[in-house]
Amino acid sequence: MKTHYISTAIVYPNARIHVGFAWECLGADWLNRGLLAMGEDTFFSTGMDEHSINVQRAAEGKGLTPKAYCDQMAMDIERVLTQMGVRPDRFIRTSDTDHERVVQALVQKAFDQGDIYQAKYEGHYCESCEAYYTEKDLVDGLCPAHKKPPKWISEENYFFKLSKYQEPLLKLFQERPDFLQPEYRRAEIVNFIQAGLKDFSISRSTFTWGVPLPFDPKHVVYVWFDALINYLTAAGYAYSLKSPSNTEEEQGLKLFKERWPASVHIIGKDISRFHCIYWPAMLMSLNIELPQRVFAHGFISIKGDRMSKSSGNVITPDEVMAVSGPDPFRYYLLAENQFSGDGNFTWESLILKNNSDLANDFGNLVNRSINMSRKYFPDQDLQPVSSRPSSGVAEHTAEVRRSFEQLIPELQAALKAIDPAAYANACTARSRVLNLYIDRTKPWGLAKTGTPEALEDLKEVLYTLLEGIRWVATALMPVLPFGMPEVFRQLQVPVSSSKGSVLNLKWGQITHRPGEPKPVYPRLELPTTEGKG
Image (cartoon, rainbow, N blue to C red; front, side, top):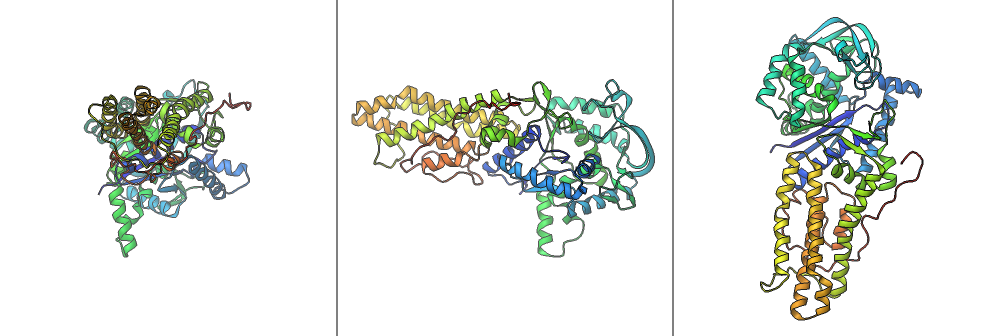
């Protein structure tokens, strides 16, 4: 069975991760959890891109070796990811032993077949981008991404024959127009290819922090050739380097074949060129199947400017979660911002999103539905109720049921499109359906009437509310994994986080009187600490 392999880009540990990278990780984590909830097998990787001159300099600034520095940063990044609820199956580091082995094997393979050669390079190089720029690429002589003057580099390097793959790459985008999504980003990449591809440097001899070239140990592998291969390593490519000799190796090779090709690389739009030109060309050279697609999300801005470590315009995830907690942070980034475009972060909009959607719409729905159930039927377990055709409540109940019948297809469509906002909004739309159902059926009025017919209608209303809440909570688990278990506890039903939990939703599973309610998402207030406004 094919496994959905989802990856993020791997992050430079030259500084702590910020909300922009958190958005990428949360999008991938939501997709991973959502596909699992639909019964799919998944594998999710993220990690650290360590072999960079920027990382070496950051280490030197702290009086540490690059490896010791990266060990510290790995602990910090993994801690913050865990705090956010991001749970990768592999947190890969480019200093990992299996990755170094894979990089050396693949760079040797490309060299042996003539796709790597030695030459002198001279040109503009931005150390923050780890990329070369031509004169025409620069904006007023500055790197277009970091607004800093690049360095002029002149050195003997090894080069990869990217130009050799110009026509195969154009053919790729002709035959697979959905290889890069969203679709509107494709034209930029195709135009870049059509303008003519130049071979790119894959080695450095001016520093030693990196994977040594197997055919020339005086050079280390250039960061992008090293970094992109992480997707193969994380999937278990090391098991392909030799014939399996034991059960563990046989299982590892089997898993790699199930995971590769990757279903989607989720990346920032600024590195589309590397993932949609360099990476496919490398895989073509190595005769390895290409990933199914690359999804390039936009940037998160703050105060109107792109969030960037190099500019210092950042907010860290733990800084936000100290105010909001993890679920409101996750919900805000996933539901408020369009993943295919640029997003924005403000404290005001985060607070508003939490208070309106989580505290008011959903939180109040849970609280008052459970309170009414316990108040009106204090000594009765709940049972599935069949609507009485003559009841005035029946039409409203049928409308609720019809809405929930469309929930799973809507969620599946959002997952296919990698649209977490559409997914979250499909869930919160059902919260509004249930709140409207309360307004229309007026359960307090049915309780006051007190006739046997009215009490039957009241049971139907309360059961519909609690069962609808169970469905919404199950669907929201990929977005809100911290708070939803509390909702299940209050409903006194098992936590729905297992594989297939959403796909297998059936109406009529609540059988017990709900437990004691308490607010799941309290209202938040705008932080007053200087700098957070």
